[in-house]
Length: 425
Image (cartoon, rainbow, N blue to C red; front, side, top):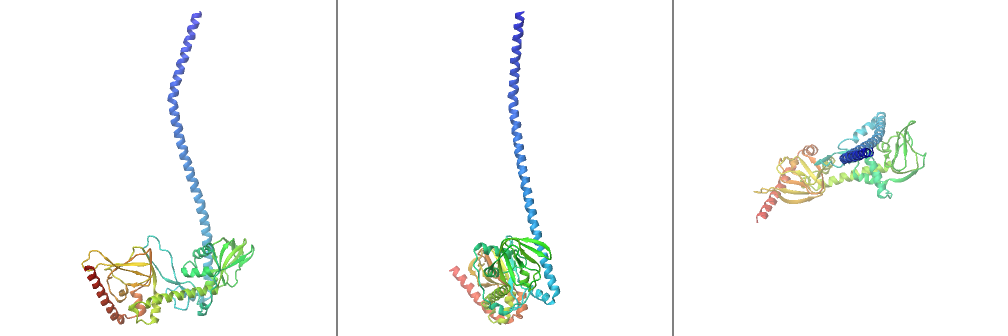
């Protein structure tokens, strides 16, 4: 019996040992599989985390866009209210209607109102941008206004930048010239308001333009709050542009720092810079040999008709052999003059022109083809231009200038002949 028990015990031990071996084999197979599964799960979790972060970023962007659109809607509502107020002013006064129509003419009469050139940065894809003269003032300005002395108030670079940015964001003032903006910024004086103070009251006569440097203001029309303004906003422009009463009230919500400009100073800046620009254009025209015998009264008309055109580096302003109808006067930058001379396969460099030079003048007399290339050499080239049709409409017959131009051509032929001799020598 004892031997049988021992035999049974021996068999049990053998079975246990065999079971352990099977478990060990299974474990060796399962562990790599589990490791692979864990690794796959980890990769999936990382992918889900990345997706969650992506979705969170989209939600944040959506909230930001929604907030900015809300601000833009509030700004547009404010501008709509301003436009309604302007229309209301014009409907009450036929004279002001006519003044507004006069103010948006392409060529305002010299000395009657301040005219400005709209200057905007050209988009990168555009080779050139033509800018027409437009007036911003909605009323005539007296010549005596120009005699006012400007007082400039000290400002640091940040303060100047805040005022300038506010002007460029204002739909009624963003098309001012750089020189006019510079003068406005320089002449604005500092003012302070305590929380609860009225900056502007609806219905009061308006004589001041404001720029908010620090603090918060609320815009109120009737008893309704239209919007809240923060630093960098320019307001009160309707009164100085159209000589009207205030169309809304503005109250300080917090202590505020402002910059202000009196209406008479604004008008003087518009007139003075407009006259300076016209004089500059007139001086350019007087330097053109072809126009030497044109009466100044006619040159003034041409100066008013000049448009500004911007070219970027390497742009062809004129191509040799192309048909030309436009005359150019350089205001800024450098251009390269090239031309194919006799028996040349490539265009040769002739000279470089800088600000104050002019070219394409023969297009005004009807010559069909350009005799040289004019290529923008500097990063940006700014030209004043007038086309043949506008020139002829303003000047009339050009027959009296053709003899002078013929003499000019003969000199040009001798110059080109000399070039040919020099290059072959």
